[in-house]
Image (cartoon, rainbow over all chains, first blue to last red; front, side, top):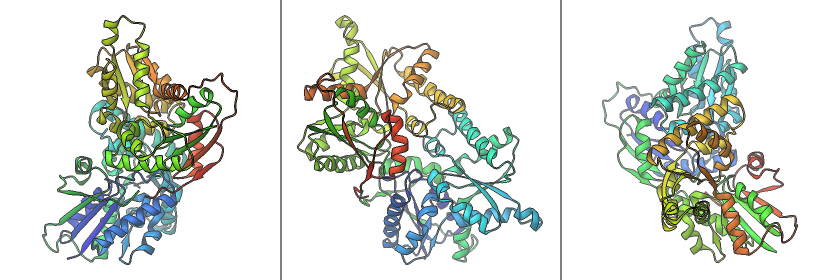
Amino acid sequence: MTTIGVFDSGFGGLTVLRALLPLIPDARYIYLGDTARLPYGSKSHDTIARYAVSSAKFLAAQGADLLVIACNTASALALDDIRSAVTIPVVGVIQPGAEAALNTSQGLPPAAQSQQHVLVLATSATTQSGAYTRALNTLGLRATEKACPLLVPLVEEGWLDEPSQTSVTLEVLHIYLLEALAQAPDASILLLGCTHYPLLKEMIETTLRNIHHPMRIIDSAEATAGAVAALLQTSATSTPGNPECHFYATDSIEKFQRLGSAFLGQPLPTVQLIDLGG
Amino acid sequence: MTTIGVFDSGFGGLTVLRALLPLIPDARYIYLGDTARLPYGSKSHDTIARYAVSSAKFLAAQGADLLVIACNTASALALDDIRSAVTIPVVGVIQPGAEAALNTSQGLPPAAQSQQHVLVLATSATTQSGAYTRALNTLGLRATEKACPLLVPLVEEGWLDEPSQTSVTLEVLHIYLLEALAQAPDASILLLGCTHYPLLKEMIETTLRNIHHPMRIIDSAEATAGAVAALLQTSATSTPGNPECHFYATDSIEKFQRLGSAFLGQPLPTVQLIDLGG
């Protein structure tokens, strides 16, 4: 049985695991959230690379056959560092997200396709790296990246349901999307370049309707799960299965279980505390 | 010349340094922002204590004669751990903040004074520790603590000036203050229990006016600087002086200089990158 290691700075990568479970049910999963050192999205390349490499080595040492970097910031800034540090295959979220953006434009004539403009919402570190722009440009798509640093705290605080809190989250999305579309007025595809953002998908759709700028929304969590399945040449029909999941976190287990369930869409069984130093 | 070490998880402690400079101008200052591991406010006791102790040891090794823990979260959760780890005097922000709250009620008759109810705004970790409640109760004051986890990200993103951003920050303050005052309707003193919050003081005053609940606002940064001056038996009139400041950060120096100046109220000279592990 294949063991798939899934890594994120915190809880967001659980949206990738959530997409993997039905797609590759006949695997064993080990998930690491580096919660003692989160967030990565506001930090520098050197610090992010040091944290991501120690986390990747931990999962490799636990017997992972394949590593999924379910964190846009670590994928954007440290994928090469991670690939140099471990001997198993490593899948990030940037390339699958960019390919999913290309796929949505594939019904179009080639000229229209190459003119597609993708707006990427992500953390400050991810946008500063320019990794999505490089990946999208290589596929012939135009790209504009927009840093949205308040979205992760809003999701982590759960300001997604209660009306007065939701109104704040919608106002923040409104500000970010207006700023982004001022730079990219012809954008037609919106790529969620942070694993926290799928929890905001409905609110983003509402905001886009309100500002009369509908766009196709690409969730790189879904796209990454598809890429992993393709790599393992498996499909949901292969085995019914009952995936075995082990969870590790570097800070408070109680908080990980409490917040994590919203991202995973189901309660988290036992979480084990580990110390990666720091 | 006394060397005063000032420590915070990031930039917020610069508001304490800003208050110290005019009060104790004839000192040498070394400031450490543990920016690679921030924020502390959402993390657990064990993780916060480990980070704070390694930071305190660094400042002691740099020759500090006195240590100011200019971080409410580290003061609330790790003051004893820090005092056990170093041999120099250690001043936190909790006790000075609580004493300043007592001082504001000292013109009142004893009965009215003991009935004073202090509302403390702070991070999740600080409120969960109950440190402010213990300190205020010991001084005979009642206390209610309110976690305001979105305020630090809003300050760090600088959503304090531009009108549409300010309206979000005011809406968040409105939600937090209404929730807090529902629990503590007779609160008459508001204690800013996080070194980021002095940058929000005017907006907090605006919000309190809007909800018709004026309160005296205590800034524990100011109170802490006063406590340090008392400990050193110095005063602003002692020497004109030109304080010498050295800055250290564990992550991006460029970001530290850029964000730090808003907290310090003046440009930051050279910042040195250090690695505390992790």
